[in-house]
Image (cartoon, rainbow, N blue to C red; front, side, top):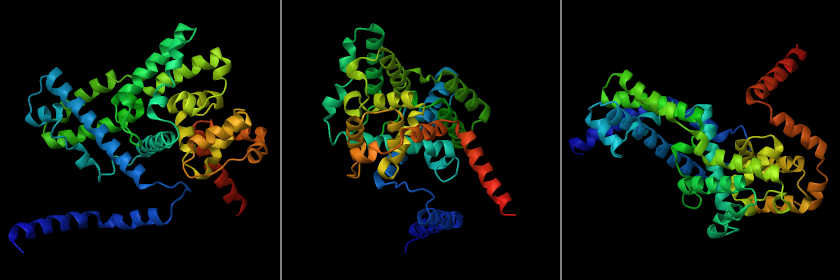
Amino acid sequence: MNETMNNDIIRHASAMAGKASFIADDFAQALFPRTDVSFNDRMRSNARQYLRATIGQIEQRICRIATDEMGVSHETLAKIGQGSGGQSFRLLENSGLLKTTEIVQHLFVKAQQGELAARLLQKISQQDLEATLTRHLDHADPVVAEAAMGLLVAQSKSTGAAGEISASLADLPAEIAFALAWPVTAALARLSGLPGSQLQQATERMLAAHDESASVARKSDRLARLLEQTAETGDAIPHPMKDGLSLFIARLARRSGLTSDQIIGFTAEPNMVRFVVAIRAADFPTQDALSVFAALDGDDHILTAATYGETDQDRCLALVSSWAAPGAYQNAERILADDSLGDQGK
């Protein structure tokens, strides 16, 4: 064994020793999951690639602001700003800074959205799917036509390959942009050796300029609202193969009072049971509900007319209403209920 290899082994061994205390945590999570949701290898890979690409775009934008707008002269920042040499992800991936609930929840929704897109493409061609919005371009209401064009443009900028999720800063919710930007800023300060104040100013400028109005989610929500107001007969019931995935999710969200992220999450659960409850509460006719379920299910499950028809709509409405409450309220309700049960056992 030569000296170079020996030093390399020692370096890797030292790195492994630093992480060894987390092995039990990782294994426990794999052995004892707390939900019934399964995460396949494609979802994990897509989520990781999306996170890496998003962090790369954030660090590139911060560096360009620092070097081009603020006049900071630094070779490392200049290279990153030009799209090469980014290293923030490497520093952050094992730090725990990217494992906050809000960031991981965002990754899960994006990964599941990619799964739904892949499922749709097994039932309808990409060309036909892209044509679903063009019918709104000739809408009698010019405001609807304008909104449809806005969504088409937004989707064209953020569409990735089939089954993959693309990273676009414009599509980042403000809270996720904030949650990712500051760890990246700290990593850049460490990489560059610059005083943190200069990079902090660049990050503040980036966040101040962040605009969600051009995102696919915002454009979908606007078109969904307009379509619900016009309520043409042909558009009465949303369908992913008729509306496209983003618009369908947005229309169901408006009808149910849920968020788009919640609805996407429901489709990852076994048999999509909460998704079925949501469309039942939204009063989807039976055949439409069966067709929507078949378009989005990825495990060859079958929703029957009898099962759907026997699902009590009033109870579904009550459940959906409770799910639509703010997450912090729902968490507090669960904790207080658990505390109450504990008090009764004393």
